[in-house]
Amino acid sequence: MSPGLAEDTTTPSGAEFARPYVGDERATADEMAQYERDGYFARTGVFSEDELAPMREAVDGIHDQIERTAREPDVEPVRLIDGKRYQMILGSSVQWEWKDGSGEIRTMEPYHHLDPRLDAMIDDVRLWGPARDIVGSEGISLFSDKLNFKRPGGAPFPWHQDNPYWAFLCDHLDQLVSVGIILDDSTIENGCLWMIPGSHKHGALDCFEDRGVVGRLYTDVDRYELNEPVPMDLPAGSIVYFHGDIVHGSMSNRSDVRRRLLLLTYQPDGLTRWQQSDIRPVAP
Image (cartoon, rainbow, N blue to C red; front, side):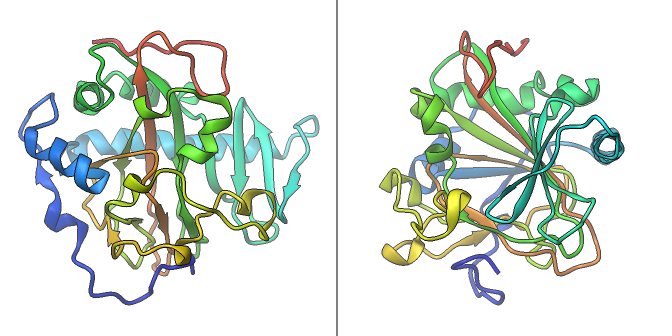
């Protein structure tokens, strides 16, 4: 279980604070107010089942492609960091599931170059439209893209902030916004994302100093008086916008169904991608 994430909770559902998508391509005043106050806002019903089907197919195809390539003799060897397995495959940094010997992917970044359908998603105005208001720029480009798999039995992701991870190679953290595209119904049981509302207002928080290399990026929430966490238990087709300093995490998947999540982080146009030398502009 992730530090600070309770298995049973009376916290209100994140779905209660989400608003149905009604075709608006800008963030509303209410959404901007929630983003300022809580560090996130969510929309439901953005993508239909007909639109989700090819996305899921693309995601599963990428998983199979990575898994096959990992078995090839000339692939880059696995690196162990804090006992966890990482590997560069097909231009993506892959972290394998924490279970020893597992051939299932936990998370990987980037992913969009591996399937044209997912690359095209970056240009969907339903995703980048509201980002313009958050980052304060009419022109938008991609900063990073990440794919999270949460298979049955998938491990938790401890409390963390994204900005401390990016800070080493980014000097415009205040101009980033992430959007999570929920491909499968997300529930507490299958390890949905959790947010701690208002935690972004504290800036970079202290992390653990005794948990290895990656552990130094996990937020020590017990040092602070923070609000109660809220689960993003949202239906498939929903999206969540969130701040780089908001503390978030997930529990293990205790169900028998998958919970897949696409993550795109947007920035003003003209800026290079995270850990890359190219610019990926967003086409209006």
